[in-house]
Length: 247
Image 1 (cartoon, rainbow, N blue to C red):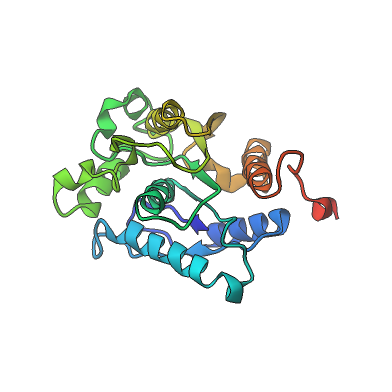
Image 2 (cartoon, rainbow, N blue to C red):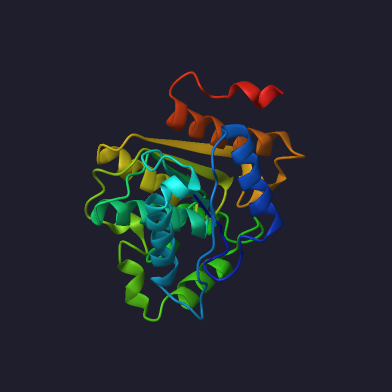
């Protein structure tokens, strides 16, 4: 399951990049990929996005036979706001008794909407690196009816008191990104809670530069990492590339 980005207010499953990306994962991982649409702010504020996305997870698991999937082998992922949604859906699945998940891939995730300005990367890369501070501030003002909602763990997963019993996580951050430090801090909190979590900072990247995976070698490496991590989760160690990928 893939959750698109867009600051909780933009983006869609019809956006070319997300469509192509999901097709690439489908082809190279030989799996069903569900590109999830969720309601957007400001018309539909928190918690519409994670609740819609968790409902989609439940539906997919309940309809596994009809969809031809294995309900015990579901991975989730997303980028930016979608990375937040993926992290929150993992929390919801744990808190609400399933469905079980084998992996969460969090790309340049928004993990702390209550304290964005406290992370050094917010100041270092707040202007001129693709995702500026004003977009971060838009997330806070458009997504929440009240500012204090940002402190809810289903809005800012890094603020959850308990991060145990969550699925394995792979956190991917960009070197020149205002969200870098909060994403890495979340990965560290997962590790401290005993979750099998890896944190990978991609040097030379800005927020969203992974869209260039067809043209730019560092972006291809980013996509390859998603494919490799997914294949290992689904098929086990030694399955970083499926046999027909070279065909």
